[in-house]
Image 1 (cartoon, rainbow, N blue to C red):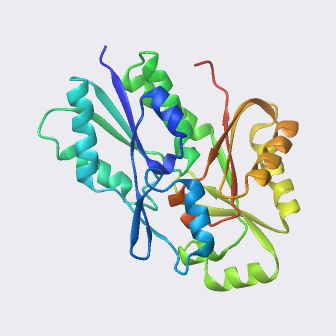
Image 2: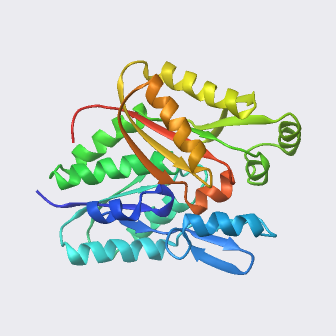
Length: 288
């Protein structure tokens, strides 16, 4: 049985030590502040990004990796492990060209290669949880087909909710209209964001005030999972305390088997802004 290697991009927000432990190859996106360009989670850490964001006079922008970067990563893996199969899992194709770059990169290889490029239809640890699961299954010796079948089922089961503090970044990124952002700011509206099954960012609900927003997220998760056992990942921008509090409340309302923590990295942070927290939940379906 051939070896299966997992490739992802930096928006999966998987902690570096976990990527290394599982042998996950990561291709970074770029974050641009004016004339300065950084590699997401490589030359710019989340801590550095949110500190820089507070004093920035211009909004940061982001850029996808080139097809050549993916081609070179695939070549490197195949040189290290000839005959390996590759699953390359990426940010939703609905709001980034990263998936397309990976697909083109695979087509540029001048050798026969077994590569599946997978659109996660998600972002941040919504991708990360799929990538980690795939890498764990690969370490168990599962085939590429078995891994793809498993993560497809997991992708259908998982839920993610973002709580954002300001609508400014969503508006400037084209996710909501200017009028909605202005009215929301005046009325202290806190949008609860999610990503739908097609990979689009949507406003799941809007409530006034942070406490009501937290309570509404808990209601949504209880409706989604009931008493089923779940794995929970808590992520944050520059509001770790809020995220941890939200996670603790979740543990009292759901049957939480395990809890993990991570940053929302610079690229996703550039689109949701500071003050954002997120919960990523997946139903437990057998053991690793």
